[in-house]
Length: 398
Image (cartoon, rainbow, N blue to C red; front, side, top):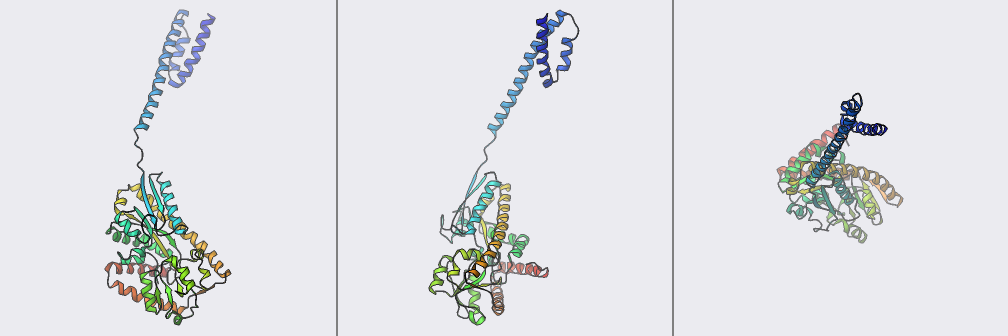
């Protein structure tokens, strides 16, 4: 009797736990343990044992089934396709614009959960330096990072997507690109089989010029052997009376040191400091009039862009815009420190004389009007940018 009682208690406890899980305990337990003869109670204990075995089997079956289903679903889920691209930058190793390209690739990989991997390469690593745009057109590489000015052989109006005398500041250019400029660029580059994503590295105003000679007035521009980096600048400064010299950036230091050039334009104060230009030029002139900003952009082979799913396209767009903002902010901060370094090193840091700025603006306008008459797209882009500049001036947007 005692033995049966203990057995009942044990099974009662077991059935209670199973009942809590299954919801059947309140139904059959009271019937088993309340009322009835001893014989009936004994039979019911046996029934309970049988039911317990069935219930346990049922739970085991359900659990196993769910686990099996989960494993099956996991095995059936297709692995994500990993898309791999190569991106060559215009910049050499150690250049901050190349570091921005690396950061862009990291951001895209992180945001896409590894679905889009972009391997970055410095200038000349995969394709010859200066041939980046040709290579992205042909598909030799999937993407490139470079200046719009390097594409003007195909799209003359591309000069207005970057720096030019009397042009838009970094702030103004960013807004104009979002309003109209980017769409114009995409329409023109699409015709060449290239997708224009946007500005990746956006810089504030460049140094107007480093010089081995003082520039105190327009008279000092006459015959000045000045290194200039774009077709437009060479034409404009020639109109001003200077003697333009075209040189790659890597040859500037030695050319200034040996007297091949008297002056040169390059990028912004912080990057130029790292180039050591304070060692070969005693004067640094600052004004946003020659290059109110500077840009290098992301271009992607059109076929490769069209193959991307929409979510990855959105990630590439957002990463490009984010890096542009980061790069601009960091550069402004570093330029402030760099100008003081020049002063401490003994460089004469001065503003550009107003008569030089006035002559530059006059000849730039003359040049742009001449070029606009030759190319309808050129005129369309230029007129749009200048209209936006007027809006910014009206509301004092620098």
